[in-house]
Every structure is written in C-alpha cells, then in structure tokens.
Image 1: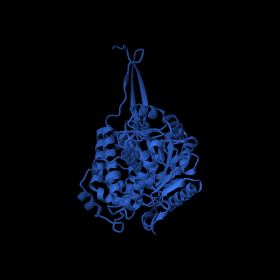
Image 2: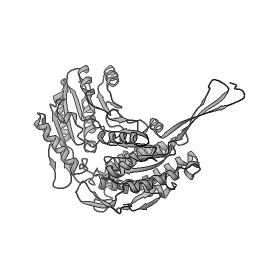
Image 3: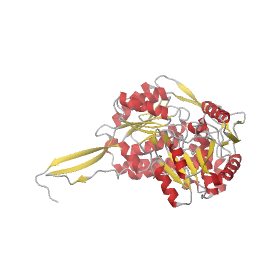
Image 4: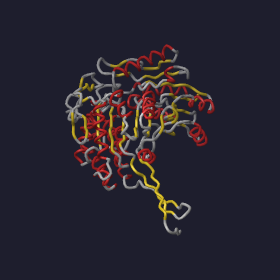
Length: 511
C-alpha cells in the first residue's frame, strides 16, 4: 500500500510513538457483537480465542456470531433502511459529515487502534499506524466527499415526456472481510456502503476482529443511527455463510480467497440473486526489463513481495527478469531480503512481522519444501524464525520454472520466486498464463515497451516502475478468477446503488 501523508513524520516522532504500547499492555475494550448500536453477546453464548501471531498467546475471547445473530443484525439493518427512517431521510451531506467525524475519531485514537491492530494481526506497529490507519482515514474522508455527489441525469428522450434517473442505495449490504489488512479492508467496504446511503452487516475475519469492533464503538460515539452499522465476529462457514444466503441482504461485498468467492457466488444464485462483488486471490507478475533503473526495480520488487510479509492478494510473487540483468537482480534481492529485521512488531526497528497463524505458517513451509524438491534454487531463507509466534524467514528462490507449484500457487507469505526471460512476447505470454488477474507491474525506461506490455497484460491493477501504490482515489480489483467489481475510487460507488428511471408524461416538450 502506498505510504501516505501519515508516513511523512520525523524519525523521532516515529520512535516516540512506537513506544506508546507493547504487546502486553494493549487494553481490549470491545469483545461483543455490535448490533443496532449495542454491544451484545452471541445468541448461543459462544466465544472464541483471538491469538497474537507474534507470540502465539491468547489475547482475549470474543463473541462468536452464527446464523441467529446474522438474522438479528439483518433485521436491524433492514429497519434502519425503511422508507422514512432517520437514515433514509438524512441529508446526503450529513451522511458525509458523520463519515468525516468517524475519520476524526480514528485519527484521534490512532495510537491505540494501531496497537490493537498489531496485537491482533502481528504487523509492525509503524505499518499499522502510518500505512493501514492512514489509508483508513483517507478512505473515509474520500467517500464522505462523494456522499452528496451521487446523482442521476435528466434525459432528452423522444416524445412528450420528462425522463430522469435516480441513483438509490441498494439496501442492506453484507460485507465479509479478510485478516491481512483487517481495518483497512473493513473500511474499503463500509465507506462506499455508507456514502451511498445503505446499511451494513459486516462479518470480519475470525483471526482479527478487534479493530473493527472498536470502530463500532466510535461509530456509536459520532452518532450513526441504530442499525446502520452492524459488526459481527465469527467464522466463515457459519456467520459468513448466513450472510451469503440471507434473503434480506441485497448485496454482498467479499474480499478473500477464490475458493470462498465461488461459494458466495453460488449462494447468491441459490438465494435471492443478491448482487455480489468479489476481490479474490492473485499470483501477480512483476516484469523487469534490461533497461530499467535497477535500484528502482529492486526496491519495487522487494516492496511488492515482502510488504505485509507477503500477505497481500496483489503481491508481486512471480518476478520475471530479463536475462541481461538477471544475475545482478537476484544478488540484490537476496541482499535486501537478508537485511529485513524480524522480531517484536512493537520494536520500531522491526519491518517483518509474523504470519497470521499456524495454518498459514504450515502452508508456507510446505510450499517452500515443494519448491526445493521441484528444483528451484533456494538463495536465502526457507526456515521458521524464532521459538515463538509464526515467523518465516524472508525467502528467495531463483531459477524458478513456470510449472513449479511455487510459481502457480498463491503462497500468501514471504516467498519470492524469480525467473528469467528473453524477449517481450515471451514474457507477456508467460505472465498471462494464470487463472488470476489481480495485479501486475512493469519496470522499464522505454515508453513503447511500457505501453505495449500494460495493454497486453490481463490484470485489473498495473503498476509501472513502482509497486503496491494503493490510494483511495484509484480503483482496485481483478480479472478472471481474481474476481469482479472494484473497491476504492469512483468506480466502487456503482456497486452500491440502483439506477431508477422515472418517465412522466407532459403536455408539451420544449428544448
């Protein structure tokens, strides 16, 4: 993700802020479900443990929502969306004001929220504060600005009629979000949902529910009406499945795996044909040409793979380097990987945190072993780090062939695969030879090469001479089995409104 204005601080401020909390003294303030502006236990009374990935220790227990809780939350959201309700009759500019107030509250509490995200997810505190929380605040403010600018058109139709369109909210929206950027992904869904005037039932990942539940407290504080925002902690097959199949949910926005995305799409067809947008997996190519700025390409490729310890759906994990600079590039990537600092995420020197849990850790280690067995050259890393938590050494493979499992499977970890190529046509064909199409990158100084390759690549997000620049103004989403629909930017708004056309007979039409 792009480093934003929150990252533009002095080193001394970064260091002093980093010391505000440690993993042992972050208070957990909200652990219950947020439904109809109240924090309530699950109907079943069940709770489940939240684990700190950096230590493997239990942080707290939270309420476990299931279908019964989803029904109650949906009923609250449906009531809040009733014709004539406070939310429906609120001025659009007032909706935007509430969203800006929520952004203000998040900025006020940014130190605590970042610490909570670090305990919950394991990412370095400075990333949580200056990247994740910064993007959250910017996204809320961006979509708040859209709230009173979503409108239809008058149409000069044939005949004696007056024709106009309205863009109306779709109704109750279900959101299902992942664990890799817990709060950012929640706000990527919530911000356009609210800007367009919808109500929401948001199911956050069971691994990382804490920051979203705290945001619910802030939403209550700033004055969102009851039922507009409902946030549930729970498991995918139960709470998530209930959202996907629910007959009173009009639209679902999902970010997660392609496998689960297919299940949600099927659930829509089997229930009420609710709208669905899916932001799914990826195996993104990063193409490095001989004529690139080598240091720029090295920095971009390093960020493209190792940021968030590889737990990015758009990670540039298939790196194709032209033969003329291949050896130099591999050497520099190994040097940068070995310079990464693993350890306590609250230590300001740490830039490489743990994986999310033991399941993800085991998957990554198995794929590393497969890479070695299939003949890829392990340049560095390849092992666990430390005796607690779920850390994996930054790992670089060279001489990777396209048929190898590490080249075709979304690893979702700090495992870089580098392959060589000869010419442009060859690398385009290889880059597109995947079921995914979320992102891609090109590093070159040749404008003709850049335009030719970006036109040929089948991906929804393409970077040129950079990587992981994600800002709230530009859309994000994929081709093929990376899903459909777009988060962020003006394009996201279309998924959360219905277009109503009104045609009125008039005695005489004049231009």
